[in-house]
Image (cartoon, rainbow, N blue to C red):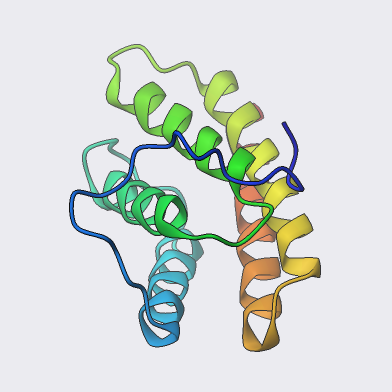
Amino acid sequence: MDSTTATPSNAAQPAVPLSVSDQQATALLDDTLALLGHGLPAKADGPGSTEIERWAAVLAASDRPGLAKITQELGQLGELLSGPNAASHEVAELLASLSAETIKVAETAPGSYAGPLGNLGTLLRKAANSLSR
C-alpha cells in the first residue's frame, strides 16, 4: 500500500461522524509541529500518544486520497508505543516511513497545508534519525 492508495472503506469509523473544519485541521497540524519542534516526547502515554490518536481519528474520517498508508502506520506506531518493549529501531523505521508518506502528501496538498505538512515530514525524519543513532 502506498500514499496513492485510497483509505480502506473497512477502516474503523468514529461512532459519531467526525467533521473536521479547516481551522481544526490547521490547529492539529500546528499542535503537532509545536510538539515535535521541542524534540521527541519522552513517554508513550504523554502528549505524543494524544497526537497519534487525534491524527488517527482525523485521517480515518477523511475521504482525501493518499492517506491509507499514513493511517495504517499511525495505528502501528500507537500500538508499538503502547507496548512495554518498543524497540527504538522499530519506532525509527515507522517514523521514517511516515515522514516519506507525509512529504508525498504535502507535494499535492491544497493551499496553505503544503508548507506545514512538508515541515511535519521533515520533523518526522529528524525524529527517526535521532532514534536510529
